[in-house]
Amino acid sequence: MSLSLNRLLNSRSGFPWKRLFGHFFSSTAAHTRSFSLYRRMSPLYWRISPLGDSKISMVPVLDEWVQKGRTVNEEELRDIIQKLNHYRRFKHALEISQWMSDKRYIPLMPRDIALRMNLILKVHGLEQVENYFNNIHKNLKTYQVYIALLNCYALEKSVDKAEAIMQRLRDLGFVRTALGYNTLMNVYYRMGNWEKLDILMHEMEEKGIFCDKFTLAIRLSAYAAASNIVGIDNIVTRMESDPRIILDWNSYAVVAHGYLKVGLVDKTLVMMKKLEELIDAKGSNVAFDNLLKLYAETRQRDELDRVWMLYKKKEKIYNKGYMAMISSLLKFDDIDAAEKVLEEWESRRLSYDFRVPNFLIDAYCRKGLTEKAEALVNKILTKGGNPLVDTWFYLANGYLEDSQIPKAVEALKKAVVVCPPNWKPSKNTLATCLEYLEGNRDVEGAGEFIRFLQNEGIFSVGVCKRLLSYIENGKPQRNRLGEIEGDV
Image 1 (cartoon, rainbow, N blue to C red):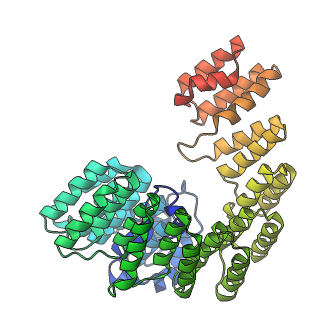
Image 2 (image 1 turned 45 degrees about the vertical axis):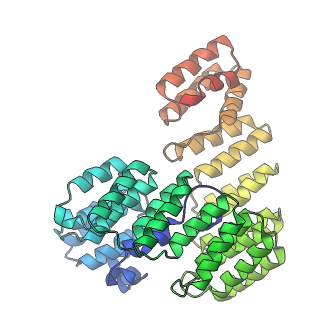
Image 3 (image 1 turned 180 degrees about the vertical axis):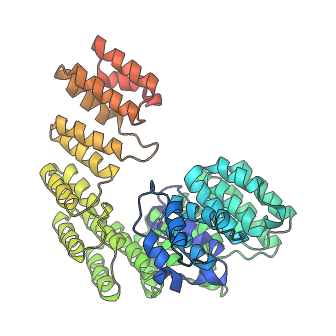
């Protein structure tokens, strides 16, 4: 369970996957070292680490490394793949995984195959995962590999395929632990099929398979989503009374969010105190980040400040910690305090992750402080930061509210250039920009803007043609976008 905990019970985005599958994708002794000697000191890792642009291929880098006579071994490569996966550099991790077997001829173990399937899903999608799985030698299709496929289906919410793989695991006699059940339960939870959770838990009990803390946390999440207070209480009692369940701060974070979801603030605060008591050195940054957000959501400003001071005393705070505190302060509408935390972040000279100032940029734009937002963006640009799509979109909306439409158009263009696949600007933002251009009789500019959006993949060719033809008949832009909204 990680930073997604703060969204766990406010949506059906699902039970935290990272913690659930962490021990699966790092199940051997070599991988139980969260930061091994290689991870901390490998010269090859430090050669690869700065090359964060996904457009840069790792293959020439690895080839050059070997050509210069430098050594590389399989455990070093495995550790680098794990670390890149941790930092969401999926494409680079996959390239190294493939290079390891294709260029170094290192035989893949089931754990290598399982992780590669996860990476293929992130980079190329489910169809390529299935193609890869179908070409794996039958002797390598172990429990670990089948669970990896089940995980991929679960992440893609492919219920029928996930159920089929689970049945295959039963037929092969592989279902001896809770992991497969937890994976399928999470699919049902995310899809709202909560009645099937009890069916699976009953099957586990019949087969003598222990319902671990992840099983119970998923069930707890469903009870919270259904505002079933009795169900939440029963799960909490079961977790705390079972000596086989070793509770940690993650467990109480899930419970705290569950009570908060149903409005039981007093019980939430009790769970938060238990959470804090169980914070240890391992994963404590993530624990503090969650605690900050919980105190913001429960409107406990004094406790928020207390935990922040404790956090700074006990741990070295990184970007995510500053994001947690700034976003928490902004829930209290305290821009001044958030600015001071941002100044502290800047003084630390950490990597210029634009997600940190983005919270303030958004707040400035929503409050009509567009000049402050613009100044902050320019300031961080000079220090090497790379604005995200959200950065430019916040600015575009701020400019629109401030009637600075030309600047809004330019900001929106910059947002489109850096946007991830399938990202779409809002219909109202697009309409306002187009209406401004048309209102100023800048037909050429409106056409150029529409073609730009087509070239960047925001509009299909058909939509672009329809919009360009509409410009000629003077039909309101908002109506035009409404007619073709399904295609935008």
